[in-house]
Amino acid sequence: MADSDSSDDRGADDLGHSEHPDRYLKGYRLAVAILGLGIAVFLPTAEASIVSTSLVTISKDLAGYGQSSWIVTSYLLTYTGFIVIWSKLSDVVGLRPSLLVSAVLFAGFSAGCGSARSITQLIIFRAFQGMGGAGFYTLPTISMFQLVPASRYSQVNTISSSFMATALLLGPIIGGAISEAGNWRWIFFLILPASAVSMVLVFSVLPSRFPHHCDDIVESKTSRTLRPLYLIKKVDALGAFLLLSASILLVTALEEGGSTFPWRSAAIIVFFVLSGSLWIGFFLWESFASREESEVDPTFPRNFFSNRIFLGVLFGCFLSGVPLIVAVIELPQRYQIVNAASPVEAGTQLLAYAATLPLGIVTSNTATGRLRVPFIYPLLVGATLQTLGFALLSTLPSTLQSPPAQYGYSVLSGIGMGVSVGAFYVISPIAVEKKYQHLAVGAVLQARLLGSAVGIAIVSSILTDYVKNHLDSVLPDSRPEDLLQSATNLSRYPPDVQAKFRDVYGTAFNLQMKATVAFCAAQFLTVILIWTKRPLRLAVDGTLAQ
Image 1: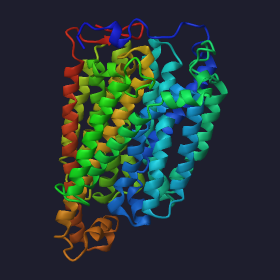
Image 2: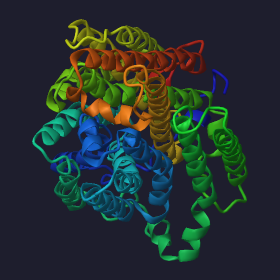
Image 3: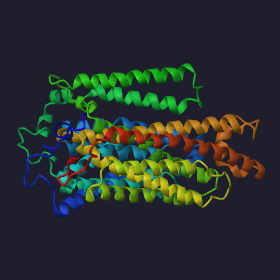
Image 4: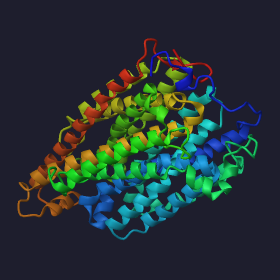
């Protein structure tokens, strides 16, 4: 897209519906709706991070440390694969029905996770939980932008991002406290009442046909969902299948390569080839489905491909998803395995990162929203702080005592992460035409979570591969799976063996951070995509301006 393109690709001329006086919620109804939707944003996000301080405990209880990364990955995979699907489904059948179904799925399979009796059962239930969680996160996020006019998008983004950041902040602490109390299963059972409260709040104030409640009912999309044939024709089922399949195969190859299968094995090569073919098929199909004569509503419209600004945001969200989740999942495990911290202590140590992340979001949104600072500057600052912070985290020693410097490194990483996330989320809905905003928001959320899933798969493979290749020198007569499982039972071994264990695991965790640095540094490339001769900033009316 040319630098001068503005109204056609970024929707500067038509950012809203006709201004009906009841189009947007006001007063207590707006506050209640935001609270209910915020809880819905909080819960699925917390479920991605709450297990971080519980993985060691869960793995020990279910005897599956070697598969523990799949507890996170299985959730992220379906969570990632269904985000755009839910956003399209709500466009066809309506927001309220879609939100209710996603809540039931999320809460129901959360109960299944809490009832799991083996690591395999837990992984399967987590996959289905992620399917519902994708809708329970995406639909409220999209809805928040539809509650208010475009001029207030920056405020809504701050609120939505703060709920997400708070979930990342409190999730590990809550998970650690519950695990330390002796029953990790309540991590999942507590989702049921919390989800119910969220739905009661939302359904008590949200109009029945929101966001089309002020449209002529004959023309409303929700009125046409009574016709099953219309529903079947409009849903992009093939696009959804290609997207989910490509994501699963890619992450599985990255997760299992170097651990279960050698990188050059036929299985891993086939997974990569199939995934690449499906990604190509997905983009070709979406281009085909975007034709005017097509009856399918594409998941990724053709004009997204030519929107350079939006592609930059999409790429940036994918890259930032890696450090965002790697820190939340891997640092608490390091604190427990290398530094012998309890689950609660590990969650508390993570606060240096998690507590500063929302600070970075607020700072970024204030700069771009109130002060009208061009977006490229927060993005440059965010990428710089992330790269520096994670580079320093990769130098931590493998000593039993945690070095105080790690908190400073975590603060740099957290603030940088928040600044980048805040800027990306403000740009995403206003970089496209109004009619595509719900798809744009869903796409960037999906990109971030796909980045998270890919990142966890890569760093988990790095850790498992390194540990398997080096722990045999510590206990040469043990099987690889016993060596991995022994990480949760270090106290059984003599002090000198424990020190060797910590050195191996500490080095492996540092390698994870070094891999993460590459994704942080790659975010500088997104600035090139977003760059224009006159840097883009947020206008007073909520559009992109130069």
